[in-house]
Each structure stands twice: as C-alpha cells, then as structure tokens.
Length: 381
Image (cartoon, rainbow, N blue to C red; front, top):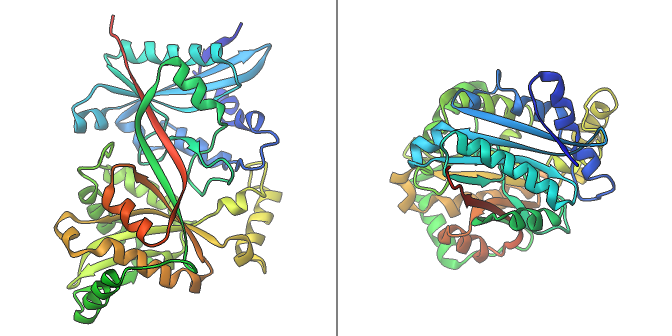
C-alpha cells in the first residue's frame, strides 16, 4: 500500500523537507520553517552534530505522492554520556494513518536493533540541543521560535504503536505587565545588587567568539545532571552560535557575573515565528526576504514581534546556591518591555525541575504548552 524509501542522495531530501507544507495546509497555527535552516540541520557533511551521530531518513509514498517521513538517529555522545544504547526518532510527519505510522516506526526500530540499540526515544530533531518533543497540550496558539508543532492526532498514532511517556516538557507564558514577585525574592535581588556580588551585562558582540567560549563553559557545566542532557562539542556549539548570531538581539542575551567572573547566562530570542507565519513559502528569496525585513526593521516591527522566548538559562554549579536564576528572570521582566517585548515564553522546563517550575509560577507565569518525549524498549533478536 505504501512504498518506503530510504534517502540515498541529496536530491531526495527535497521531498523530506517539503512534506510539512502538505500536512499542515490550512492550519492557521502552523509556522513554516525556513527550508534552508532545515536543510542545514540535516546536512551530514556540514552539521558538526553528525561527527558523533548517524541518521537513517525514510520517506513514504502512495501513488507517487509523499505522505510520511521519519528519521532514526543514533548519537554516540548521548549513549556514552548516559551509558545507554538509545536510538532516537525525529522529524516525524505523517498523514492520519495508523498503518503508515506503524510501517515508519517499525522500519526505524528494526534499523536501531540492527545497530544494537535497546531503546527508541523521541521525537528529537535531532537531539535535546535542538527542537524536540511532541506537542500534546496548547494547540490554540502557534509555537514560539525553535519549538515544535504537530496535529493532535500524532499522539494517538505514536501511542497506538506502543510508545509511552518518558518525560514532559513545559512552556510558560509570562506577561511582564502582570508579573508578580515575592517580597523575599525582591529583597534578595536588591541585596545582591547593592553588595555588587552579582552584576549583569549583555553580550559583547565585538568579542563574539570569546563570549561563545565563555557561554559554552557555563552550558556544559550547568546542565550536566539534567535528564537527557548531552555536553556539546565546541565545534557543534560554535556552529549553532554562528547560526544564532544573525537573529540575536544582543540586548536579550544576559550574562551574570559574580565578582567579575562569569557565573551564568540566559539566552532570549525574539519570537521570529510571528514573522515566519507571514512567509508561508518557507523561502526567503525574493518575496520572503522583503516581508521578513519589513517586519523586522519596518514601522511595524514592535507590533509584529512583541514576544520573546527565553530559550535557555544556566548557572554554573558552584554559583547555583546564590540564587542567580530567579534574578535573571527579574532582569528580563525589567528590560523586556523597554525593548518592545512585554510578553515572554520560558521553554522548555522539565516537568520534574521543581525549583524552576515553582519560581515561574510564583512570578505569575501560566503553563501554556506541554511537549512529550516518548520511548519504547526494543527487543533484540
């Protein structure tokens, strides 16, 4: 009924990348990705992630039309760091057909077993350092930049095949105009500021490469014990930073220092999805580029992009008892409206990260979306 085909040459990636435009036709909440960005992620020769990972991409056809896709992924760094034999699946898109879903997942599972893997987990596109998770709650709004989106029926398809919950990831929306802070938190923040123990600054774009190295040091130290975390190789981190540089608002990347030494950072990015929704083709040239520049730099900039996403926040382990994390949020709530971003989304937060969940709730944030990562044991032959 369906013909499954593994991708063997670069020209076949076009069907893989273009499929979502058919799946989401008419969906007002779907935000088209930039095709060039998706192609860059999947480029096994240029993306440093694939120096320690391999990918098994599949396409499904019916009557000559592409109707499904998936990719199996094995990240050697993940398995070495966590002492696991885990394969991931990602980039899953499919028509609402259980038989086709079963075929796609069976094929990936068999590939993973042939490689000696004992668990299949996902979706990861292609890792926790990128887009990941299946949206299961929060379909009434479009996703923020670099977050996933999918039809509600995807959860039914995956769960019917046998995948079960591994971990939920939460997204919180926070409106600075309605935010609230405990007197204790505010007093602690003022005390740290008055003593000069903790200071904040924005990224120095004139020393971008140096700043990237300092942030990488924090990144790999801060999340070392987090579920699913994999330390990033320097080359991989620099590659991602290079991609981010073009969309970065320097005023939104805050660095916390304790007595002049970097202690933590928080990366917030403008929600470019508010613009990309208007570039439906996923292509920047020529009309897409004109639209993008208009909304980023034209008179309607602040009306078009009034939301940002707190993408990542990390504090070195030695400084975590100081309480810098909540202070970074207070800084954003103070600076955000001044920069034209009164609304922010903090995403994602692990469901069992109790301190961060409580801190956001105490500030008046409400949980707006839930993403789920699934897994299933693989029975080896």
